Image (cartoon, rainbow, N blue to C red):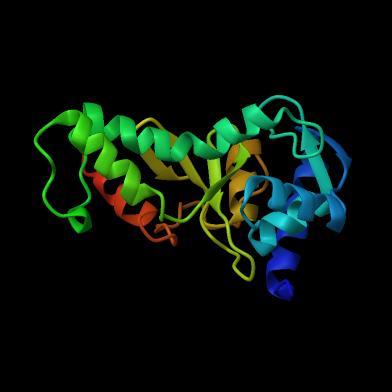
Length: 197
């Protein structure tokens, strides 16, 4: 059962995006379509992300086409955050402290990292290289922007993200809120990336 606050948050973000007119919005995904996507790709949308997509499906440009998109392309998109971490392991000497001692050989380090990354929380693309953590009965996660080994929060929740990315009205403070990632591992990677990793 989806959390009502998560549904309200996602619905409000979808209506804001539609009002801004910055994306073509098609009819939202039905419960059956959402369930098919989740079963096909092996994750569950967070409650706010699910509501966002059910109110209206943004299409074109950098929006993932969950209704008619190419499965290989969508899988690639879903795998990109992990592949970016593997790139950081190979090229920038990233190694998570919880993984123990880093193997001296690069190929062994990559293989070890891949094994550890098999259990990190799944990130789901929202738009282009912007992601939300997966997970039913969760919501209000920061949207993370991931490019290579560079990861930053790009909105403290889905509404703030739409305002930031597509130029919607701000909440009136004029200052950006300090945002911490909420998904295990990705919060650590964010910290490492922001320390110049």
